[in-house]
Image 1 (cartoon, rainbow, N blue to C red):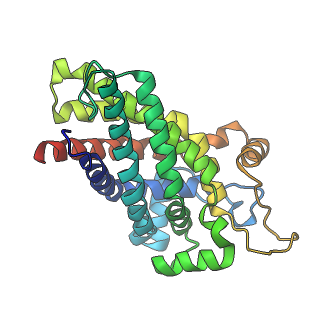
Image 2 (image 1 turned 120 degrees about the horizontal axis):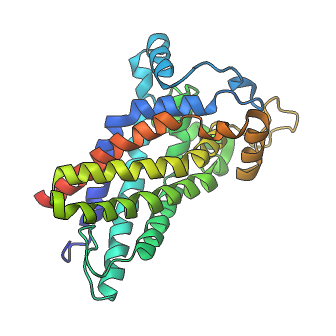
Length: 300
């Protein structure tokens, strides 16, 4: 990337926003599938949807097509921070380590200085750090997708802070960061590895970028869906500041408690609720992102 180290950050943010707009309705169906059927939360005990298509159709019919994009602005704000920090940090760290070993390849183009272990560690660090910073926007996005928040973006943030405090803004930050680190640790090194291996046959072309991103998305979907279910449920629950202990809604105590209760009450497969929309979203999201990212590299 030359000496202009700001470019991975800018390209990562812009490409993330483009990909978010293109796949957000799928993410909405995934979120609604993940929060339904919770025996510990009377608001979401009912199984309203039988699958992704049913959720898509019912949401459109009952609430309008606009409901599928409810939460898009906090999602865009999240990608502007999360995507910028994640991809910029990953490629900058990767380049730094590669140069220390006397190779190149800091921008994903391959090179003798690359190491799968180093790439994985750089990706996990970048994913976890960026996700933790952007967590408040993720909490608001989840609640707007579920249909609990309908107000203006800034007012929603202020109301969350007033009712739940600072901790409410970072609710679910543990599993969110773990999930982001896991996705990045699988997705980014797999993409770069597939791209390198396919380059002799396909060249550094959009077809190569498409195939590599599709393969990367499958692995990250399988690895991350259980943490995504836990993250979504923790973010969707409310715990009012100074609330009495006799509240009707039982609050998960944390990641492990949510994991145990979900398996105990709904079975192991409940951890893979929303897997199909997760995978179907990750595929197009990664394709749109990496193709956009690679084209920005060529253009500038």
